[in-house]
Image 1 (spheres, rainbow, N blue to C red):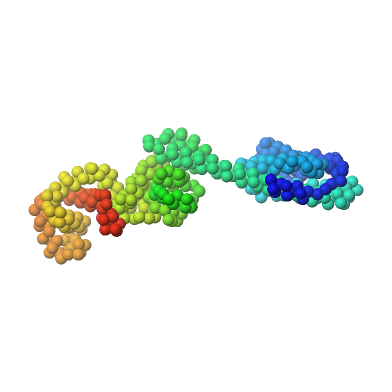
Image 2 (cartoon, rainbow, N blue to C red):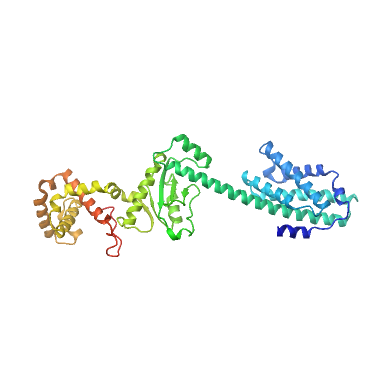
Length: 418
């Protein structure tokens, strides 16, 4: 309101009867303004439809009537011109028009109106003093209208962005639902959210930042669906393979910790999110050693598989490593480590010795002990595979045990890839 009062204070004084001089040919002036706008501002040259052309026509006529009314009575409340500017700006935003184009059209119209007055002055209908005052008023009015137009444009833009954000949030909920939503429901939500359905997706789950929730949100590509208000904020990345989007997301997530789920068909987005959550939980527990940045599920699939059901993993350990579990804890650790290294070395004692930093003869001594414990199983491919799985599961379960990552004050070593 202060700005309106300031503009009103600058409004020039007019001699009585000035508005009456402007009335003849007012409708013709409006049509000239519209023609000039369509001729000189390319975006208006070819009206998209009758409704669009009608809005332009109505706005120009309203502007002229309001201006003449202000000349006739400067005390006229200026809120009406602000309303008109706001409406023009909001309409431009909803139609996807550039605000600078709209303001250029206003300036073009003002120039035409000024030219018409100059013609009248040349005919002696308007005095030079009155002409100068009217010219000053025209540009004050256009400034006022342009400012209101910009405000309306920004308001509508913010509202549309908020609405689009809400629609995309609802789309994300549908996509990661378990069980999955129908194809029709997904297609309807995607259209409403202006989101192109991809062939594949990958989910990202982010760690809750607690007291840091007020920190800047990550900078993400526009096509990524995001819901940052969940307890576990998550993203859905469309067609991540070969698009460079994952790299862009990693750059945007600097300072955040998260897990990237596997790339899956769109209909399996919920699974990608579930696996990403599981990996992030393993990071928190210290099973996966990475404590910051984006952890990729694809690099920890064996860990995910072995710990998908920890009770079953423990049953596997107990059943397959029963001879080993009867030994003292110190012996268990030494022989389990040796057996796993030997299995991973394709039964080569020399390679196992190098990995364990011991003499090959030490490995062979331990292998004789293991041969006594497991017998023919060490020579059977299927049994050897079961033993390696059980040894990996034993190691992961040990690292997943409460407090295992904090005992020494150091994070647990990464489990994947062993």
